[in-house]
Image (cartoon, rainbow, N blue to C red; front, side, top):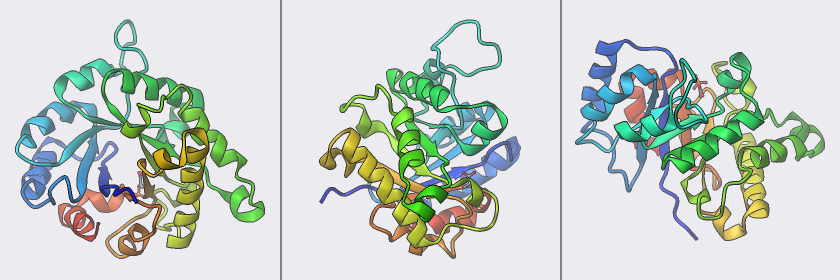
Length: 252
Ligand code: PEP
């Protein structure tokens, strides 16, 4: 079967100051695995991205944006253009994180606009699916999760889907200290892969990486990442620490 390179992605949110960013990168730069073994990335505030691109020029660490606007340019004060992200050398962008949906009115439809804008500009979206899967766990009702995945991917072609990563992050697990069990995470990731198989094809669904996020740390990561449909982790709190970030990359 198709080999998916694992992905360990830190999400710093609005934590860290300039000096801390620099120290972290200096610490991990030449200790992370080669990109064909484990891909590593750091999602950070826009103001740090250009410096981070320079500081990681000799390292496989990917610099990731936490959000992006859906228009390439124009009168959208305060937003960040996907074209400008690509221009400074960013490859990946996180889209539809739970906190964006919760605090900034991000909807399935704005997520989809951002996904297509990112792809149009050569950026690779990491799409957050924050469905809690409670309907699926209780009644095997897959509809809410399937609907969220399908809405995010509306208009994404078979050729473009290879550039998509999905991150399954149940709302209740983010920042709560209570991660999903490996079994719950696998069940959800499998449902997402089945949805991709239905929307595209089974063979295409095997090529898309699916990450788990929500209170991952070096103690629970190895069981979660050993699940067949889980190809890596999206990590908030634990990945603020360079040693824990490196540990997670080793585990992957
Ligand atoms: C996140 O913000 O995507 C996340 C998973 O955070 P934490 O690891 O702190 O739960």
